[in-house]
Image 1: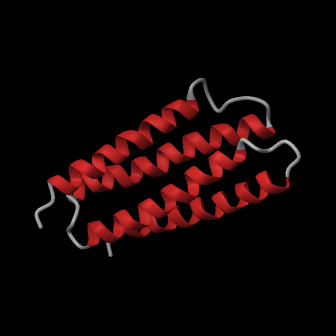
Image 2 (image 1 turned 60 degrees about the horizontal axis):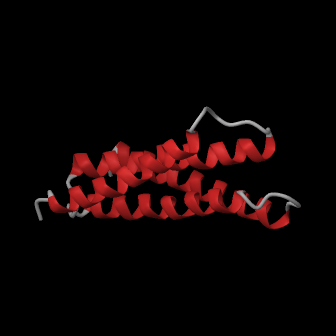
Length: 122
């Protein structure tokens, strides 16, 4: 297993743990409903990263494009969830348009997965 795969698996685990923590906070917090979408983004994209690593390891995705997509999921979900979490608990944004930027990165990453599947050698 390559170091990049190990890193991605570790990051997916951290994203999953953060997603569960945010889900619990949104379920038990008085006014934490916006954390539910942050939780969903983290949990869904952590699973997508694990699936991407499995597909990359089997050669079903183009390696370079697939890795870019997987790391894009990490960056995009971190921007999106981080921004929503800061708004909830600190009352300010990560930076202007952080959540939309994260969403755009995730959309582009999904398009990269499509390209990686088309460009795969197997």
